[in-house]
Image (cartoon, rainbow, N blue to C red):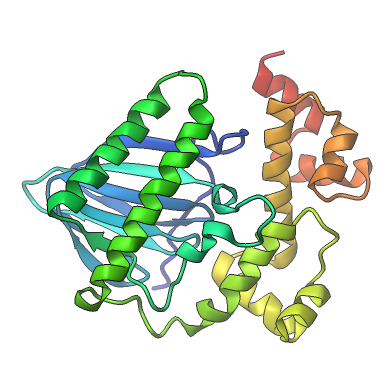
Length: 288
């Protein structure tokens, strides 16, 4: 029997200028297998269970911090008689990109040499708990500089996790060494996320990464579950949706901003994927 996990494509605030959402959840029976094209971290507050990421399973206890990368299939399990209480934070890869730099904090992502989780304890765990609680409270509030503070706190949390796992990595289970495909595709995914606004073609990627066009196409499909063209459209339209609801830019300006050479092409593709034309999407989201 062939098994297909859910592909989750959205979260609150995803199509806004601040693509980040954090919530405190109670899982009585785990959560079904799924994947998504955004980043996610979780932090266990109470209860016991486990999590499987690309068929590598680890225990989840109070103090377990997990960093799930885009397109990884993951599933949560709650131990019988227990309730797994944990924070979940979902956010766009764009938030890890430093202005003027191609990768920035994306260096945090290393599938083949670093574990995807850490079991924090003592002062390290207390510090992480306080950081995440502060972020959660900031998210629920409406204080000035809220968006900036959330991004600062996100980076502090992820850097704290990365420092801890580097320090303790020898005692943890390392990510699946069989996933060598990801080692070659990940820089390609980074590059597409950074340059989707350009006139980008598979042939350009093939030259840049010294792979054939067919191989580039294959590894993108294997990793994202989408063809290169659909992957590119998803990234461009997500940016477009954010601009439609957060700016007063015209639709023609937005089309050029996100990488489409013409208004007609942008409007046609937007309608095919979203079901409405850009102007109607803006009116619907803004309640006009």
